[in-house]
Length: 314
Image (cartoon, rainbow, N blue to C red; front, side, top):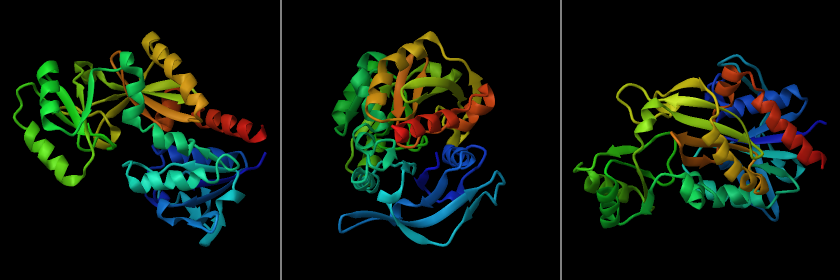
């Protein structure tokens, strides 16, 4: 089976080919004989009933700096694609949301991965709210008094933007920290969105586990250990990936959320687990494929393409 595959992503020339999951998905697709096209989200458009994208045919190779060979710029109708990958990074803002609405118009005749309707309705820090017994105490609020009351009840907390990513804007506040009002003022000046506050989990010093699920089934995990003096474990800010095995608790969490992810067309998902607690369900542009493949020898990209090819064949 040869598929026409388009990647909607941030500029491919800037990616780290040894870490970027989208590059690995493109590489695996090319190895299977699929034809690749790439475009950035700003090149997506709607015109008189057609959803179009301006971009380039793509060939990839594992040579940093010479990893993406692009054809001449041209415009395609996404209805002519077999698969479109929704892979640009957050923030999950109105630009991101608009792109999911446009991609809704071609899905499922063109298979959009992950399903854009449910990406829009299940952003990472909100889907976890449906599994309260699996998550640490959590508040979503814009009101400063409510945030103060939550911290007074739970002591040390993590405060972060509701639609942020990559560890940006994440703060640990001690029970008596006097900076909450200042941070609230700063965030309020940036946008009108609520903040998310969670009870701090001391187990984060031992790592923030990224568990990867393919079509609702866990295929493995990596542990992301914070750098010295850091609370955040994101690899964007110096977190160190380590080999780690799935625990019984990890599998319990996956058993609970996996059927919902599969039902809603979330083929490639990365969840975050600290200690015994689920903190995020990442459906927008999850990462971790290459690290897991190196640590465990699991062909995660191949498994993802097995699922997609089966969906297209069906």
